[in-house]
Length: 344
Image (cartoon, rainbow, N blue to C red):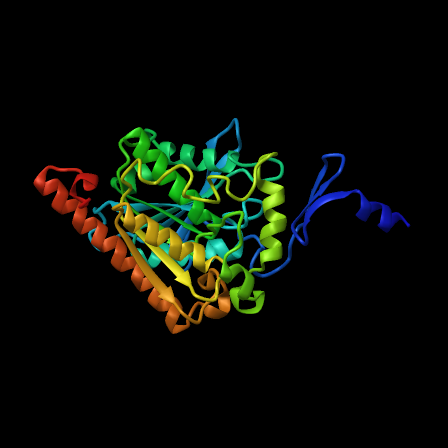
């Protein structure tokens, strides 16, 4: 009887992660799953080619980040690119310390020779959207803060990128839009945006949401629906601008070049392709990399780390970052901004 009463008192639930009760109280589950188990930071020695340090960005909101710093360059002098990364988790779950995100950032920081800064933005339902999005925008402003170590000594603020997987891709897109609208952020220059399997969605379901089952997609539409009810502001639906990137219009600004990585088995596949098509239609610089047999965020799973497609994905990220750096150098030589050099 007590269990029935408890179940009846639930308002919304993302099973295994978070439960919202009718009285407004919230319960979060401590997971022992290998993907979501927490990895402590290690600032004193290199593991898999990086050291890791946790830092507080905002005492008021509790905003923090984990910095993944690769080993010194051969000369020990060259400053490194900085990648501001936003994790997935449906806006309701996730932590830079989770094994799946810690491992992803470690591999990419080591492979690209760049500093990855993984942001622990506020989560719903304790903090419904747009709180998490506002945190990510604030994190970008923090990069240029004086004395922000180790970025001040090792990172190059003129070689910055935004990246995110799943809904972290949604957040990276919104941060890019915000930076373009404001004309920059504290001397930080964003050269490119890396969207890995972004969680773009609309109120109307797409074919891939209906037809791609969770076994291959690696995420279910039911979980997305439950997470949406937990994270959306009251009175809104999945056409909310953080989920549906066509609101506000992407025609109003020019964002840096965007790399979009998709898996055709992903439930978000159709919206990801639609995003690329619309971005290109309005003149944005977009590169699409597609893996026909793969599902949502396959690189995050340990069993896929060494597969050829995972290695190819890392290589594509490296190529994109190199291309953006060369483009920025060319723009500097011509004394024009990156946005000005992008053809309309």
